[in-house]
Amino acid sequence: AKDPVRVLVTGAAGQIGYALVPMIARGVMLGTDQPVILHMLDIPPAAEALNGVKMELVDAAFPLLKGVVATTDVVEACTGVNIAVMVGGFPRKEGMERKDVMTKNVSIYKSQASALEKHAAAGCKVLVVANPANTNALILKEFAPSIPEKNITCLTRLDHNRALGQISERLSVPVCDVKNVIIWGNHSSSQYPDVNHATVATPSGDKPVRELVKDDVWLNAEFITTVQQRGAAIIKARKLSSALSAASSACDHIRDWVLGTTEGTWVSMGVYSDGSYNVPAGLIYSFPVTCQNGEWKIVQGLPIDEFSRKKLDLTAEELSEEKALAYSCLN
Ligand code: NAI
Image 1: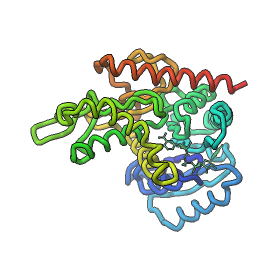
Image 2: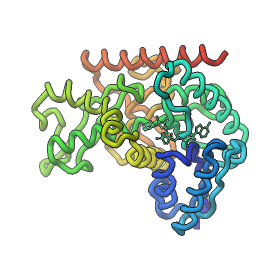
Image 3: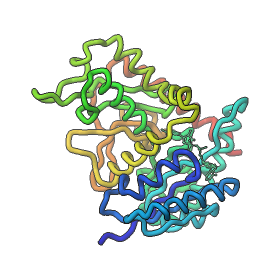
Image 4: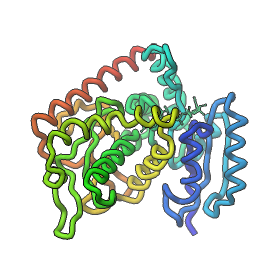
């Protein structure tokens, strides 16, 4: 039998945490043959609720779950973890300035970076979910210099899956037949959902999404804004932000990263830019990636038309501004 993998979930007493921990314990993230030990971190005001989640995990009697650490101590939470899913953060509240929210999150991600650097297992893979996800990941990278930058990522898989979902609905085809959409840039409304390379499996082979949809007006406008604004639409409908879809996408992100993407298929991940596609190096930016042997690689050589170029640059600009704001909050 395999040795258990230790998976940290921060903000585990929150909405996404509540949806995510049972998925991990069921093998959705790492496979149904992989035992896990869950490490759950939250802050003292949420300690009682966190303990309630632990009680439910015990009650669910998950065969793969070999242990649960529920704590408000960041060192205890980070010790020995192989995977870290960072969901905890400070939410933007009504009337708060962007800078104030950024200051809170910068300080959280700075201290959690240090704890991970000192106490996580070697080779720990980090996924930042909490917003501003790209910039929180960047801060984490800065303050955990001994964790290789290739091990620090942020979640844009939810946006990727939303784009697949929209195409599937529009064409009335199963979502599993749609592939190779791309989310470029920031996990914010400036992201660029790109279908130029996306295809649909048909009885006569893979066909480009553009050829099947036959409506460039829809693809270049409504499709893009629907994906960009989907988070807000969910909040309006549910009076709560996306949780089950965020949790499921976080599992997809880690599963593909660890176990690999299918031949001929790429996914979107927020990763450290090396300057590919003329995206400024040193930003955490969402790119199309393939994964093999536990490592992601940016898909190279995709042609970028003028329309797309502008959108790639716009979201990069926003990320550069966020980065500058984050640095100004450090002092
Ligand atoms: P939530 O408010 O229900 O839960 C957040 C939890 O984090 C709370 O239990 C809170 O006590 C905890 N927390 C706060 N500070 C912490 C700290 N320093 N250490 C550990 N835990 C801490 O929020 P929800 O709905 O679970 O969302 C979590 C985050 O994920 C938010 O920032 C949200 O904006 C983001 N998000 C990101 C998505 C993405 O695709 N990247 C999609 C959906 C949400």
